[in-house]
Length: 111
Length: 113
Image 1 (cartoon, rainbow over the protein chains, first blue to last red):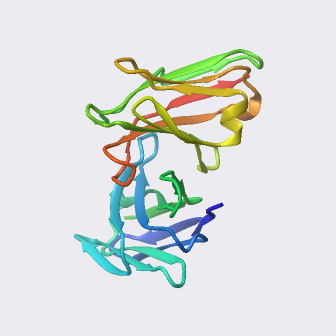
Image 2: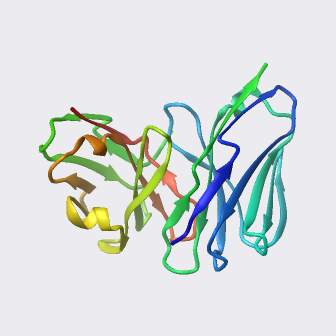
């Protein structure tokens, strides 16, 4: 049974800071790795995905994946107040296609 | 704006009552997921479909929960006998394939009194 954990649970950073969010998973056969963002009262929305080891950058956002260490992360450069939201990592395992979500990190970016 | 439409937005039921919520997936998306988001923001996978067929479901779903995605009709999730612990936000999401990004609706917030 896939276990997906996120750290930290919550984070407060000043505007302009670099923010790092972490996600660990338990199934070494996992194949697809996503970050979703949910603003308060809104539907979750996919941010970025990565499928192979390494790094992927899109604008201010970067994902790192290390399958051997069962870890991937999201880094936000020049954090903005509009980035304040619940961030959820999600992993699809080797068996079945259900997407298992992490426990979430609540990010608050203070102006 | 979300193209996955969920109704109703809010649902209030007494313990033991049936609770039914509906979801219209994004047009052309054959894969539909249901998740439960509790007050601690934890997401729990309930069930997923490809077209009208169930792909996977958890044990909880097999007991008091039932779901279907009939052709040419909205998908639905029904709780046969609501319990206080079922109070949560129920999110429906759709996808082109099981591996593409999920598009979520705004959810149905269920309160069981």
